[in-house]
Length: 440
Image (cartoon, rainbow, N blue to C red; front, side, top):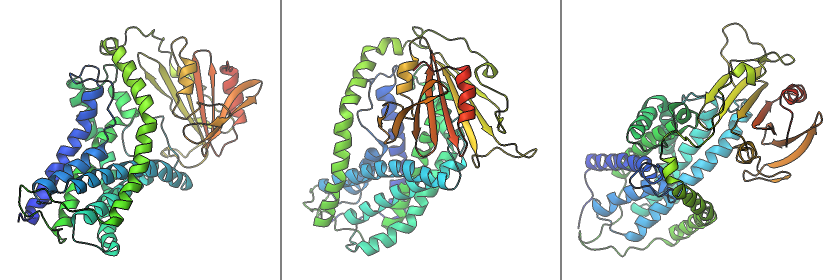
């Protein structure tokens, strides 16, 4: 009977598999989606870090620990995929709610990839939940533990490490994440028109560093936990395929995980397929470099596009402008006067304003595609928030609350987005509607 490697070897092997998983999680989607990649297909084909991480950890049990159960390997991949989705959505929803409750509102008008205070709660929730689900799945499938109480006792303390790894990984975005992005860029594995500023603003660099830190760290944690746990019986020989079956309770839980994952994939497939067809049809022009067929807009200074004067008792902070071949983006925050030398924070009443300048004819479709979810008027949008049409100072505008008040409208080829945090919107809306009358 094949025995499990020594504790030191177990930790080392799993750490290396975690590194391999992290690299594949970054490299595989890039190879499939980058226009200049030799393996370009126009879609990531529903590959996610959770799938890859679960498969890499299963390799250890199949190859080194002698537990050659294909059923358990598939179960681990399913559980790891479910852990990824659960942690992502829980972090985004519960974490943002927790940040808002503490007065730490999201600040997206920055090109910095550094860890912000409003990201701490989402990262902790996502990291802890993902770690717990992976640890519990491994212990139930591959250890001799049969008691959920003992599984919880071993999983919960180490789950906290998962939260810390998520925080550390995000904080490494400006260094490790930027290094990964630069490496991909040098090998033409990012879109040709994507620059460093966009990579930081879109948090791509943070995702790279989180993938590396969390997957390597959690693989190491799994090695430590397994070294202290009595293993499940291995197959009688290295060549035999184990006929071990899942425990009924574990099989039932895996079915519960498969159902939402399958629904997500089935509902996403039409959009993924259409997106893939579009990218393949426009492959040559997308890969041609800076997008020459897109009409360029003059890069107007921020003080021309924004109102950089006090509005009521609120003062404008430093404005930001982001220029690209496809459009221009201008942002500013208005907040109450601060003491001299005080650092700007997301705590307290403030207003975030964003003005986007698009090529002729783009604004209408871009307004529908905004991340704020102004895709359906007077209906529930894809983010679950009710969007309604309102009239403000004789202008039609879109409004939603999720949980802060958002306003948006189109003014010819420009889009105005305003987010209010404990501030009466009328004075700001009047000023900006005078500057940018709505053409909705």
